[in-house]
Image (cartoon, rainbow, N blue to C red; front, side, top):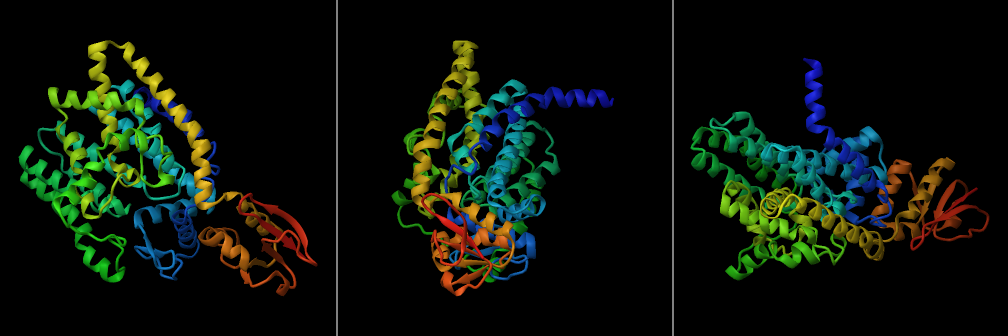
Amino acid sequence: MRRQFWGEIIKNYGAMVFGLALILPIMLINLLDVPRGLTVDEAAFGLNASLLARTGRDENGRLLPIFVLSLGGKDWRQPVTQYYQTVFFKLFGAGVYNLRLSSVVVTAVAAVLIYELIRRRYKSRGLAMIGMGLFLLTPIVWIQSHMGLDNNMPVVWSLIWLLGLEGVREEKKVDWKKVVMMAMALGFAFYSYKGMRVVVPVWAGMTTIYLAVIKRDVKRSGLFVITMLPFAAIIPWLEIKYAGAIMGGAEVKFTEIYQFFYPYLSYFDPTFLWIKGDATVFHSTGRHGMLLLATMPLVAGGLVAMVKEGGGGLVLAALGLAPMLMGTVDSVHRASRIMAVIPLYVILMIEGLRWWTKRVGRWLVVIAVALVAVNFWDFWTVYGGEYAKVTEENFGNLKYFKAYEVAKNLGGQVYVSKAVKMLTGESGRFFEEVYFSGKAVLAESEEEVDSGVVLSRREVVEGWRVIGCFGERQVVCVHQR
């Protein structure tokens, strides 16, 4: 019996493990090189994850707050992602590499879930492998996997919701456990990323109606609503305790019908999906869309197949409704804010591949894989070249963080010059917490320090021995005496 069990596991998931083992190491190759610097949001997440893991308090001294106020009171960190990173740091140590590695792990979990979703939907391990590959090679997925942010976290929760939805779709009698799972997934998605504040209500409403009307199970529909209720009921209290944390500064408004639908329709703009991508320069290469251009025929075929052959109503509804409320927050062409729909596009790609194969032949699979590979290689080349330079222009180069590591290993009291503080900003605060546990002392000038270790922008400080200078655009030198 045990041998049969493990045999089934290997048969169903062996190829998936092999695929992950092949792609994920490539994803780790230039983890600290692209992007070349840290965004302020990455630094804020890292700083508070390190503080919470070490002391249980955030940068404001609050004990295990639900939301963390950061960047001088300008932005709130989302609890699901912030505490995931905190646990990750607690288990594996705090640091810039582990900050970004935590994001790669999120992508790996999402890849496993998308493999399972495709396998269950199409009863095919081969299609599941292709689906996982298409997901991992998607430009916005690759870009966000290299950033210690919260943009890719909703993908995991949307996949859990879709797995529950897929299970319910196949059942005559709805399993209450799947209903609870779907509600919990959307609840956690709501608090994983700010952009999900306008997606989750739509998907929750869609699920409620589907269970009550299509599945004709009012009790299960009621169970779904009751399970989600605590996530919504706590909002008024959260707005009192953490004022502004729910919408994060976004102003919800409805001015006119055209202004409402423009953001919504922008998320289905073909040039956005396959050519330009995210409107923010460091969330896109500028010449590759949210999806690879080679997948356009697959998505088109998938749409035709679902409309003509049926069976894709839930997928089309979830995809079409997801950005419906983006017009209330005036969010246009922001792929990084709508990553939760990536699994839906992957389903469309697989559906399209099946549709085209029936009409053209199985050799089309080889051509499709080859085109995706060539398209991804072009993305990879630009990502490591032009895109990397853009990130350096926007938030500097990470190489100077080695100075903090060297200073820590020297031992003794560490002083950070005012010039270094001004140069490194939020990233410097993160590094000081990681390497010196917040015990570094600010020095107005190097001359006022008698002994110890000084981080300075100057290569020569009279009376001090220079240990080394680190960085390129941003250079930090380590001195000791």
